[in-house]
Amino acid sequence: MDIKHLTTGMWVESYHGVGKVIGIDHQHQSVIVEHHHDHQLQSINVSDLIDQPQLHNDCDRYY
Image (cartoon, rainbow, N blue to C red; front, side, top):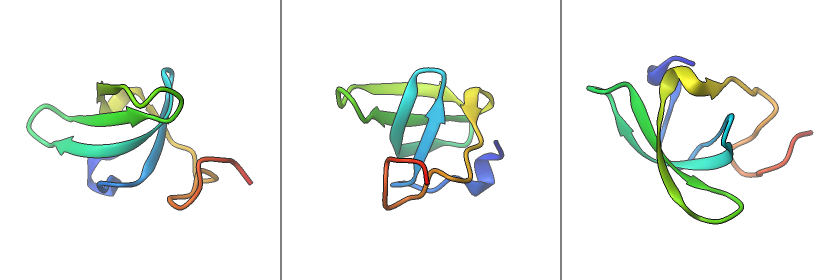
């Protein structure tokens, strides 16, 4: 996934699950994600994100 397409507040998926982007670190090509299931924060490299066009920003479920 390209870091230029990420915005704060959007939902993303990684191998760690679904979470909301709360911060973007362009220098280190990573994002800080708040996980949906336990609200834990984690720094995830952008290359570890899974591009899921069905995961909408206003919903944490697939269509």
